[in-house]
Image 1 (spheres, rainbow, N blue to C red):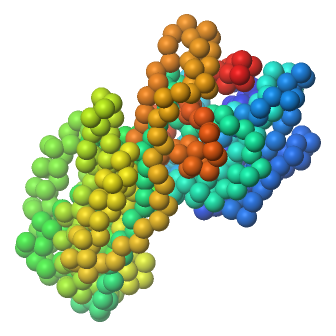
Image 2 (cartoon, rainbow, N blue to C red; image 1 turned 180 degrees about the horizontal axis):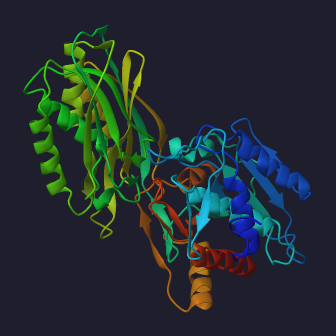
Image 3 (tube, rainbow, N blue to C red; image 1 turned 180 degrees about the vertical axis):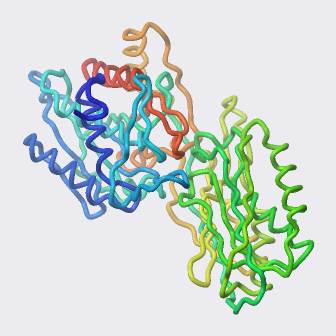
Amino acid sequence: MGVLSGLEPKKVFEYFEQISAVPRGSGNTDRISNYCVTFAKEHGLKYIQDELNNVIIFKDGSEGRENEEPVILQGHLDMVWEKNPDCDICFEKEGLRLKTDGEFISAEGTTLGGDDGIAVAICLAILDNSSLSHPPLEVVFTVDEEIGMLGATGLDTSSLKGKKLINLDSESESVLWVSCAGGCKADIYFDMTEQQNNLPAYELKITGLHGGHSGAEIHKGYANATCLMGMLLRELSQDSPIYVSELKGGKMSNAITRECSAVICAESFSQERADSFISTIKAIYMLSDPDITLEVKNTTAQSCFDLASSTKLISFMASMPYGVIRMSDEIEGLVQTSLNPGIAETEGNKIHIGYSVRSSVNEEKYELITTLEQMAAKQGAAVETGGDYSAWEYKKESPLRDKMTEAYKELFGKDLEVTAIHAGLECGILAGKIDGLDCVSIGPDMQDIHTPNEKLSIPSTKRIYDFVVKTLEVL
């Protein structure tokens, strides 16, 4: 008996549990891609698997509907790997440790991967159900969405005949997303000069932050641990020159950094100044991040980076931009432009700061990239950009949107909210590849995605499954 046995829809949660047992972090999608291929073979379905690990599975229309225009269902196979410091799971080798309270599903100490594993599970359950009424289906599973939508960007769509696409990568059941921001990655590299260390060494750890999705939650005002570390190091350098030996904070550019650690070398360390800094920060973020903590302990470091390169790094980190830059003038409450430094890591003699930049206005996105390039250049750092994707623009006429709002009202007796989202979705990329594509995005209620607190609503998942099934019936 699986952990999710007895939950409804049975097939959806059966497949979700199987998917959760397969390691599938971004950049590690071979096994989950092959799992989908095995599913297609076992069910006698035509499929395509490309060199990127994208998978497309085709199913004929149900009886009497074989000659209708196909509908595309789409989600991504990869997930964000984040875990609590005390969690001993090895993501590369182990599946997730699922748990449920009957209302929500979560994972012990790690992200759940409901983003976007639940989309895959819903699609597989639909493909596995021979009793449904539906047009021909083209089910598209992309990879590496979380690190720049690389799978969607490289997907060959020539085999797809559908002009209606339902993306299942949203986290709010009652909302139909019809537009999203564009985005880009900006990777900043500091060339550091290494030297032998003869000074006392200290390990600093800032932990306890909320974290979250830099697209869906950037407006909530959560602190970024790497930014805080930069400001802390600048404060400490007022008492004694700081030589950075190691920096580590965050693994995904689109996840708000929950913790950051640094090993520094200095002639002296002011615990009083460090405590004062954290006290001030806790007061500023008392509502959004009440559990911010700083741990300081003595350590050893055989080498460190010289003062010049350390000072340049600290100067950049202490002032690097983060958060909401501009809100939309057209849609109340919608973030228009933002950025997030989600990666900080030591790579040999380099320090890497990885940014996710988002905007629904392409000119503002590129302006932010230019700002980062100029700031980095002042400190002698280089910037590499990639994963650039355009915004998904709102369509005034959308038969798919109209049908789905009607179906939702019929099923649940209430209106479906139609709006835009700041987080990036693959709809924009796919709409750019398929002429005349009519697409929307939906998904069940989820909380705290991209963090170990991630939860997936069980009853909401059932309603979304029923909604998709109903939509396929009436299209």
